[in-house]
Amino acid sequence: MQRHQWLLTCALPGLALGCGSEPRDEFPAVGTGAGSSSVSTSEGASGASGASGASGEGDTDSPGSTGNSDGQDTSAEPGGSAPGDESGDVRFDLGTPTSGGGTAEGGEHSSCQVGSDGEASSCENEAPPNSFEPEVQWSWDRLGSTNTPLVVNLTDDDGNGVIDLCDTPDVVVVDGVGADLVVLDGATGALHFETAGVHSGLTPAVGDIDGDGLPEIITGTGGTFDFGVTAFEHDGTLKWKSAQPWDYLQASASAIALADLDNDGDVEIIAGNHLFDHLGNRLWIASVPLNNVNASTAADLDGDGDLEMIIGQAAYHHDGSTYYHNPDVVAVGFGLFPQVANLDTDPEPEVLVAAGAGMYVLEHTGATKVKVSPAGMGSTGGLYPATIHDFDGDLVSEFAVSSGTLYTVHEPDGVIRWSAPVTDASGVAAGTAFDFLGDGVAEAMYADEYMMFAFDGQTGQVVMQIPRSSGTAIEYPTVADVDNDGSAEMIVVSNANAGPKTAPSVQVIRDKQDRWIAARRIWNQHTYHVTNVREDGTIPQFEPPHWKSLNTFRTNAQIEQGGVCKPDPPAE
Image (cartoon, rainbow, N blue to C red; front, side, top):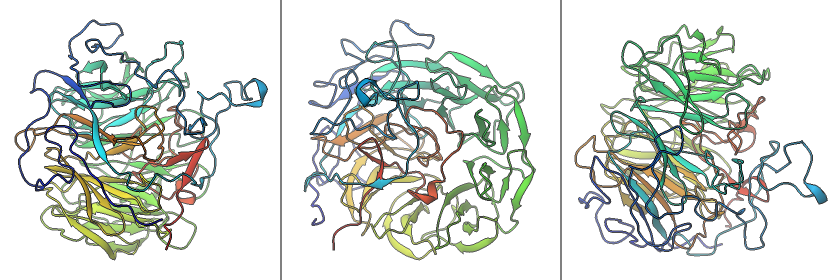
């Protein structure tokens, strides 16, 4: 297929999608100012008709403080029916066995439940030519967010008494300095509920930690002297707060992660260099200290079947004993960002560590393989979470990072594939990638202080830019099918931490005709890598090694015929 031509439109006031605006021009704010909340939807958007306002004030009909939009149907089609492609086939991820372990009557699977994990197949679907026409589907505005937006099913939108894959996904954000944990309808942006008093700089994680079939939201609450990891039920009800404290400073500009480290069926909670169990009991603290600005992760580095907790320069077995400690990795001033993928030709994974002195590629044993100084690296040091993806369709996963003035895609050995200018003084924001057209070349996405960009994965050419504003903590745009229509959407947040707020707190961007390839309907944590969570929010007891299939990190997967798939490389 010939590489697509980009046809970009201005769907809402202030939206700059190839409309002649320069990237650093000032744009008018969209939505209402601080202190109130509003929802704006594009006319014709899935599950909405025209623009309408939704107040954050409203009757409380759930344990969390819940606001309903004025006259809006928060169930929002297509939440009441399963999405499909043109043939009517359901496009849910990872198979669909019934809850009893068998299949539905007649030999067909239930379309509303997730199934067993499977290998990534080759994608067959491809969007029509010239089908990259982004527009804002909906936006929600209040004070602003500095956290990565998450996507998960938390509400029974079709009213059948069960929360499952036939309901509309929800968007989870942290808003304001206070701060509020906010849950929005994925199709319309209507407010489902909010819970006050969470840490404003901590990206939560969502997932079923107690085996009840419903995801919980894990974050942190309290002040400097009584701060702790905190779990909320799917409806915003407080579940527990850890009796043992977590360092409030370490949680700043940081992220929670979920994993079953020891394969016992109980989920562990990774919080910096602390590990908690699913009941909120602290299990251990890593021997290596960790400052704020961090996002620890987990992976089976030694091939023994269970997972190691990785904080960057060190990794630990599930019992807290040290697996490796590499003193070459230097964290200058702040914390560390480990990413896991296969970055060479052997079958074992590597750990890509972003640290204050640069990027380190470590062998699965923790030994240093190569050190990379990203393009444009200056006073910001190396404080950048990385994105790992096959950006250019050559069947080799590259990694992308920001370094303050440039967003750069590097080959696995550190050689630069391409760079694009950005403005990110903090240097800690991350990016993502997704092949929206299914043509084998991904679009790379990055949001700096003024704009959210999409770049051609082969060349770095800007193919989309929309205004956003942020002081850039560790947040990044995410991609998921947020409205259950079988087509991917982008989600990006904004705040006023670096000056006037020029865009709504949350924007969801779709193709104006919903022609983009289907994505999974979940993004549950900052260190998301697809195999870490099933589409219904359950955390796998035995996590499949993602580097043996998709080999990505901080990017979502395409889905097709009930399973995850990988696009074929582009035609010559």
